Picture (cartoon, rainbow, N blue to C red):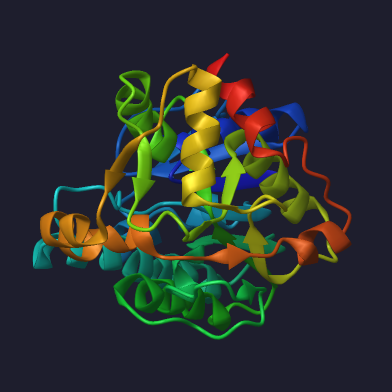
Length: 300
């Protein structure tokens, strides 16, 4: 298949380029920049938030068999200012709306499947509740963003998959890479109570899962992209410290995080015990479902 990939220069996008090429797919990266990630075959240059720029690429878009839409502003910042929140929202929702509109308006198309990224932030803070794809939407900014992000795909009349992605573990970037310096200095530990559930997925498993969803016609609708073994944050801290052979005695009270980070503290304190049963029932098998094994594969 010719797969059009947005967000191809990000952490997940780069891993996905490699995984798609291993399965003999042709990868076209849609980006406003000029960088072509390793393994990609072609650059389709356009800004997702500029509908007219996207329309100029229609001759190429007519040839695409599948779309994997990962693009989105990074959530990480010192605080979520009003400007930052607008960038987070527009990069996901407006960009998706524009891409969907262009594909919906094509007079001829090869497009058979559209896979859009979302996040487990859809569920909000849910304590010990087990969350599957039918669970209700939560509350808060991230839940609102994810709900609108997914809604933007409903205009499409082909097979659609929305991946609600958990915390992606990779030493190359994302949350784990940001944690490692502190943990290596012995400064890891509990955030808030430490009892909140953390649903995670190893980067390599996420790339494999994404390719699986593209290739398997029985996979459709919302899919939770998380390991089968969520852990409490305190247990994650302990496991990471043990892999690094460091202590994990620090504790950051919730009030300190909320005061210092504002709404961004939701990422650290929300409890989300998310089930991956649906994708496993479709036949997908995780290579690294155990947290310690996953961390060792990244850090050793």
